[in-house]
Length: 465
Ligand code: NAP
Ligand code: MG
Image 1 (cartoon, rainbow, N blue to C red):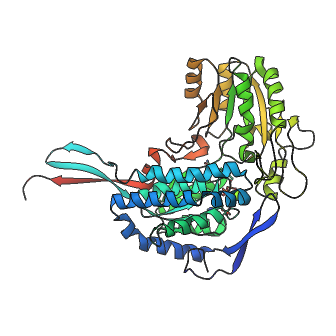
Image 2: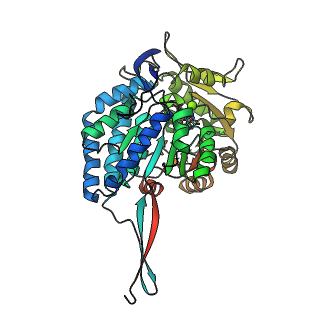
Image 3: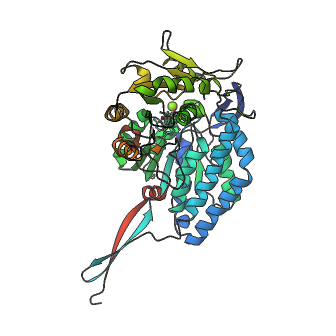
């Protein structure tokens, strides 16, 4: 049976691992391209009735889903913490964000959506129409939270969806679809297909009945999706990689900047597209900053995701650990490292590299693991130049007590989100997304809705007839 219910039989099983123990957490059916076709057909069939739901009824149902997820928050958080290897406190926050995201977009179906535009001979106005069936392809680092960033605006705008979670972390998405159905979501509105990207993801992208793909993942796969989607002119939004800079000026609260830096790059074991993995520090404050950063990194509690007080878990897989280790070869300029537990689990110690050469792979490439580089800069112009010297443009931070400088630098750094004297750039109510090769389109905030609907212009003649 496929995960979508009455789909075609699938031949293989998918073993879902727990990265902190390397043991099998669950075994589920592995969906294939045929299951995607079945799921898309169900979404196509469910679309007209869902599109025509009265606005207040759709809003009410989204609130019901939020409440049902909130009721299951602890179970979902434990499942996410175990499957993704993230601290339980983080997982609780992420499931809480799922609740918040559904509540936020529940506000949209009943809000005004169009304009009236003065024209001769009648009345012209715009409405926003849902796209139809949208395909959602999501990564393993924040599995259900990132799915919710797409699900909630897609559903609020009147679309039906097929969600393909990463095969490493499909469990909370599958559980979510059950919860949503129990809360009253009609069959076929949300369909989850747990299978490989190369087959299931690709089939969604090429499927003629899928109107749009919302993708979060690597820049490499994002590029291939954009190219393939061109053949059916599908709408595409892409949230891709990052190599964000945390810029620390000498006039900043250096204690606060250093205390916050480990969380900004080692949170989620560095597997965060917003990770401030390049820490740029004004030369005159470098020694002091490093003196403060070292104990903060060494104090990070790395271990069992379910244990109280854990701040960092393992990496997602053996493959990811190998890839990250490739950025810290023998002889790498390790300034200092944190701790890791012994025994099974895909552990990698938080690592700070300094001094680094400008063309070092660790400086240029997204690592997606707990490795940070610290780079000194001379002055404001140099800081901006270094921050922008990357193909990516997702996020970043600026630490300074000079308000005018903070605003100048915030305007000069080419990224989609920035925070000043803070590392928090993701909120449900504000837009999030990339400049440059970090992607296009915005999730969250009011802007996400634009990506799940098309504008229609209607002209009604008031002459004659
Ligand atoms: P990934 O390999 O790009 O995978 C992301 C999703 O795409 C997974 O569901 C994957 O399926 C699927 N996929 C893989 N190949 C595909 C194809 N040819 N066609 C359609 N779908 C395909 O990325 P990842 O390894 O999960 O995550 C790490 C990367 O994601 C990092 O580069 C990170 O920066 C980026 N990321 C970005 C954001 C953001 O918001 N900008 C957020 C999180 C992660 P399977 O894995 O199941 O095969
Ligand atoms: Mg991958």
